[in-house]
Length: 206
Image (tube, rainbow, N blue to C red; front, side, top):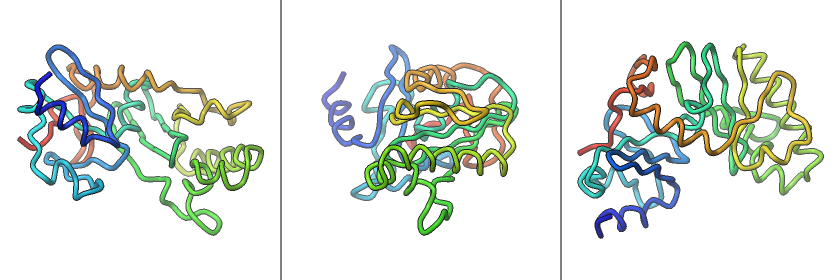
């Protein structure tokens, strides 16, 4: 790995990278959209600052929201709702192979937002028992509104649940690597519009 690539990795504090011999996928804990992506990160954004990922790593690079990457690795067909229980609430839907990263955690809930109750803040503020009740309530509301055929709960705090909410299955962070691999394969995932993710080219600005 080149010195420039190592320098980029040092800047990628909100990012995890899946590195292959011939390609790399970087997953952000932030929204990523469009063909040339400018997600907000501390300091103005890596992509906005003109970092040439492909040149730094010496191979093609794709940048994707972390929840979308794990959702893609968990996808088995139909209409999937992925919810990541971590620092906040990551969310992505995949419908008939179309990947749509979402920001459901920012929707209003009680006197805050969904992620303020089911993210790390809610767990630390309200305690484990209340957090579990809030997770079940939030998941039930989203299922009722979005009517998915499959629901995957992932993220670092999914293991804090004694039992999963009805209709859900547990994901695993390792599925993100599967999702990264699928991004590089010619899979049935299709492009819907600007901001929708595909298994085709979704690379950082060169």
